Image 1 (cartoon, rainbow, N blue to C red):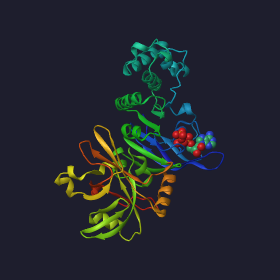
Image 2 (tube, helix red, strand yellow):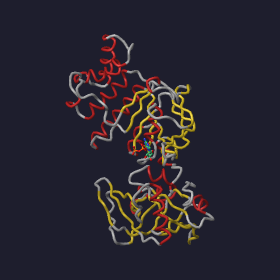
Image 3 (cartoon, rainbow, N blue to C red):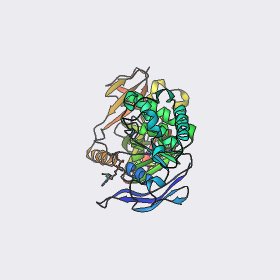
Image 4 (cartoon, rainbow, N blue to C red):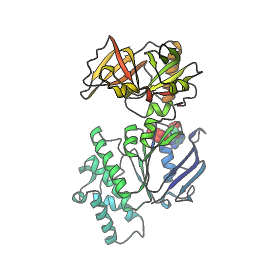
Length: 390
Ligand code: ATP
C-alpha cells in the first residue's frame, strides 16, 4: 500500500489551456479519496496522470514519497478499474482475474497464480462463477471480476474511473455499498473519480471537489455538506440542491432581517453581522432547513424564525413533501442567477426555493403559509467572490 502526493500538478493539452491547474493533494496510505466535479473539470485527467497514462506538464507526483512523474505505468504498481471493466469477453472469470499475473513475467508459477486467483475469488465471493464468461455475469459480478484483477496484482493503490456509470440505479446503489465495504476490508489506498455527488458522499473518507481544473475543497463528506467553502461546492453537493436567494440586511421591528424575494427572514445577530455593510448577499438554504411552522417544537423554534410565504405547488413523496416557492426576479437578480448557473455548469437556476416539509403537513399551495426556517444553519455568500462568509 502507498500514499499518493500531488504537488502543484498542472496539465496542459495541446491547446495550452490548463485542464488541471495547480492541484495539490495528499492521499494517505489506506485512504479512500473521491475526485468529483462536473464533466470536463479535469478529474479523469488527474487520475490518468497518477496512473501514468498522461504526462504531467508541471508539478510533482509522489508515490510513497518517491517522485514518479517519469515512471512508466507498469512501474507505478497501481491498478486501474475502468467504467467498462475492460474484461476480456472470450476469457473465463478465472482467466480474467489471472490475466495480469500471466502478463507480468516472474509473478509466479501456475500454482502460485492459482492460489492468488482463488484467494481473490473468495474475497469477492466469485468462487462459483470462475468458469463463466463475462457475458454470463451480472453487472455487479463483472465489477467484482474487475476488482479481482486489481487485487491479484497486489497493487499499492486502486484507481477507479467512474466504474458504476454503466449500471442502472439499483445496481449502482448495491455496487457502491460493495466497493465501500471491500475498500475498507482491504484497506487499499483508493482514488475514485465520479461526477455523481451521491457516490462521492457515500464512498469517500474525503472528497476533493474540482471545478474547471481547480481544486475547490477537500474535506469529509459531512464537512463538505455542512461547511461548503464557496457557492460552487454548496450547489454541487446535496440533492435537491441548496437554494440561493439574494437578500439585503434590514432592521425589522424585532431585530435584523434578511429581506429576500420570498419574504423577510429574521436572523440572529451573528448572521446579521456577516451581511453587515454589503449591498447584497446570497443566502444559501438547504431544502431541509425549512418546515411547516405549525409542526415545529419549541426547541427548534428557538434556533430559527418563522416567515410567511406562498407555496406555488407541492410534491408529495410519501415520507416527505417538497414545497416550492417561486418568486419574480428583478433584472439584477435575474443576472445574478444567470451568472451563478454559468459558474455551476447548470442550464439555469430557476427563481424558486425548494423546501422539504414533513409528510403530515397540511399546507396548501396558493395561500399565505407560515414556514419555519433554521436560521442557525443559513449560509451567507459573497455574490462577487462566491466565498462562504459564515
Ligand atoms: P468527464 O466526466 O466528462 O470525463 P472530466 O472531469 O474527467 O470529464 P477530463 O476528461 O479530465 O474531465 O477533461 C478535462 C479537460 O481537458 C476538458 O476540457 C477536456 O476537453 C480536455 N481534454 C481531455 N483530454 C484531452 C486530450 N486528450 N486532448 C485535449 N484536451 C483534452
